[in-house]
Image (tube, rainbow, N blue to C red; front, side):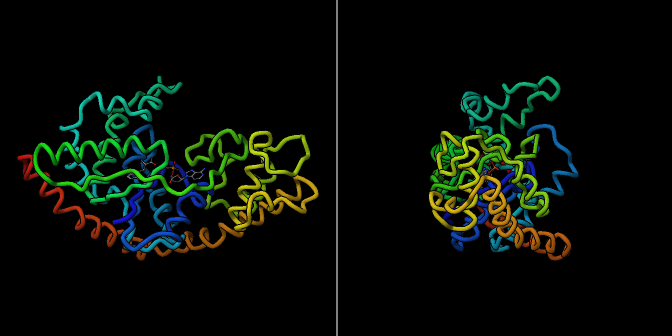
Length: 325
Ligand code: AMP
Ligand code: TRP
């Protein structure tokens, strides 16, 4: 296997997910690569069961619609029995201190407004589940952004420790840095990344947004009052974000893409049309796949079967070596 990555259905896929991850996976992917919808990771805070189920299905359909091969995809919860078992085995060799050091846990557990929704044990142990995801499938390279690199490091530590203590069961994975991706920012607040789990979605473009909604959101994008149509990310972050989006959608260099526009308004119209054109095929195909319910079920079941088969011997070996089952 060359590349292994998950995407959590904490919201609909955004233009950022599409340009930065999904379309690249489809375009640059190699036959051994594997991608999954990490729905179990969407349960670590307050969540809505029906919404989680619907988003999982929609995300699976979007990954297929983008052109990722069906046999390279699966839904994490379809492997729940295996992942649950392996997570427990790994938790029993992970120290409390190691888990407590995870930056994402520290940040999320100390965020404001948690009084109403207490921090769950699942948020604390989630990196161990992520290690189970990786180790069960025998992934050797895991391309992740900075925020997930520490989790892959933990998976590496746990694999080494298990192999050293009990005997060889796991491939030792390593985090790899994916080639620089377009970093799409929130249209209403360009200091943040465009994030599917953002509370306020006026600045977030979703793959499944209808064209009119995309156009409206883009017209309202925050710019500045300088009136200079140049690519200056520090001084004019909102404008730079629009230029980057236009460049990513048209394949032109970001410093050239703004030439010839008379005003920010004209540029926004061009960005809107480029985004609508970019997302139209994937939105339409996602909608079709969601309507072809039996076909989507079949693809999902097949993906689950393949991923389960891929992991079965590793889990059996780990159980045997750990003295259980
Ligand atoms: P996330 O939505 O944070 O779960 O990320 C899923 C994948 O999409 C990861 O590979 C991210 O690097 C990528 N991604 C998420 N948001 C953006 C964004 N705003 N711009 C570019 N890539 C993104
Ligand atoms: N936790 C990752 C995220 O929230 C997604 C993910 C889950 C993942 N399991 C993984 C990524 C295993 C790489 C490998 O973005």
